[in-house]
Image 1 (cartoon, rainbow over the protein chains, first blue to last red):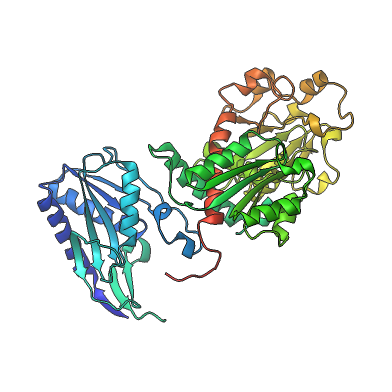
Image 2: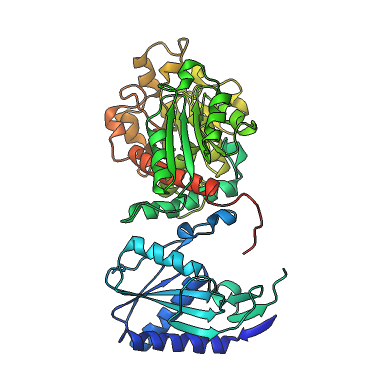
Length: 177
Length: 315
């Protein structure tokens, strides 16, 4: 196991992503952050807190569960559903930023786009991830990346948040195949 | 979980998983887009060998909201009325590729028979078998009680629930006793001795013959329908006497705790076990039970059909 992103680097990456989001969207008024549970939702909450700190005003932030839209449901035991909370202004005509911890095959994001389409029609949809590990199976690209981490498909990326795991870290493990 | 046949097959954790899943699905049903792609391409057969309104349309609505294809099959107007056996019916459904069969049957154990047989490979959901069980009804009742009375708690610990009326013929009562006690509630059955089943003293409940003595202490009353179609002998002198002793009326409604709720699985015999003003009162959650039924049945279908049955498939 090797540490790919220790806590201070993780905090810097989140700060940089927050600034990039603000720069690209000319401030925080038009944006809505939607984190994909479980860890994407925690990351979205971190980014939202950072943006609020920079801008000095509250922003629209929520969660989007995509389980019911997954294309691999048949391949594994049933998954528990997680809460979806759409902030007060909804997604209609907003710049929606999807937030997830790791971007891998891209299938989660495809499901998220479907789930989002059921709720409304955003002006734009952007994607922020903490780690892009490559091996995409769909034509999907992140707009904001904390760290590009070249991996082999069998390796496992482990993202930890203090709220859940008692520590902030991203580490790389050799997968047993 | 491959079939849903009886509440006694469910662990407390599994029961809570169904309720929690239903909670999330209820939020989807409240949203602007009610349809989800989750069970696209799956075929669900409603096999109803006994009359039903809300259970059948509730399962149908649940399946359709998850994009499954639904085939409705009722005994009347099918080969069952020509004398076709359950086995032949099941094998026909298997040949058509049914992924799940939701079965209601007047024989207790019909769903179990279907699940244990090798006649078909799909999931079996018991939607009421004779006087045995009606698990999806109990789950939606528990879901409704939890939403109103659990105050954010996970289970029903500390709540006192009265199940009143024709317990003898009621599969709803059997499933509810099992589920509500499993979730930590205290259950009291209220009925004349003639409408209580043999062996009720071994159930994990209290029994009372006096509705008025417990009405002030309950958090929910669940009124049961007097099942005239299953009554082959005389169980009480006349309907007026039954109503007076065991019916829910305005006077009893007034004695209930301010937060207590009134439930009924439907269909109601208005004027017999429940008066019209009780059924339509502000305490009544009877229509909410119907709404919640769709969410709970979506959760059941999702958990039975959406995933694979192999345990431990890797990321």
